[in-house]
Length: 275
Length: 176
Image (cartoon, rainbow over all chains, first blue to last red; front, top):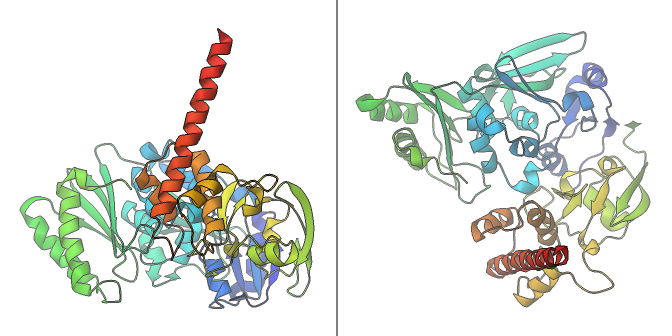
């Protein structure tokens, strides 16, 4: 289908974006990479009065390694992170997860913050952000700025803590900690399809922090004990997420993936298979 | 730049090496603009939500879904479509290999796949089958079962690699 008609602004500064969001609120949508928004516009699932294009806003294009975080601006494309050689040491979990996102043709345009804004429950970037304890930075006019922990930001299916007049100006991924290992694994019908179950892991002597995507209505991360107590903890986690059956997989299969794949990911390093 | 919904915006872009002008309402997708305004009908429109890959073109050299871009966003950009591949009606090596290996039947998905291959082989000149299949996962082909496509892409990668090696050998010889 073709989109319903809308006004279009090619913004040239962050201030202009915030001003427009302030004036138009819910009637406006921010267009970054467009890999989700354009599809919903084409199908007329979204019919905004105004589309604010941030692709040419230079100040939203920065990637900064500062104060223990990797800060990624609103217009930074996923491919810019995959091309960043330092990413494997800065945020190894994200480096492992990126190849699982859609296809290279969509990562070429899709943005990191756009995936966070869309908040698909099976999306890889929100999962990494929640598992690592990252931060979403929201800005609105008059210098108002909120820094929301990822676990509070994602509130349900395609639902976030962002208010209509706010822009996700950047997201911050905590940098890798010494002594922590990072592993990622996903099961989908085909590579690039939506994850049936996606698992992200931070593993240290203190325990395992396991993030699960594709099962609950948002990404969920929990700290699990290691050793004999692990299977029971994984089982409890699997049941706690309210898995649903759909055409792709049954709820029971999803729970089993969390139990078995989760255990292997934690106990067998080689199981984090590169894509 | 601010364009009201009903206003047709002037768009200037470089299409397959030529400067082209046209106009489009803000809501017009890039694929429709390329086909209907500029006549680049090699761009095929399939699913219109970024899944099938038939509309893939190069935007500033980067493979992108042209159904997931607005025409107004392409203003000032360089766009390459399947029409850029043949020279003087002679198909390029990739197109010839597709022909040889029966990498197409109905051909609907082919122009998009070819454009993905262009960027893919620049980024990864010596891919293995797994990498080629990973690249193809962004395209739907309902005729071929992909086997012929994989063969064609691998063959071109090998040919180009050999060509480069020979070129290198010649240059080395000239150095001596």
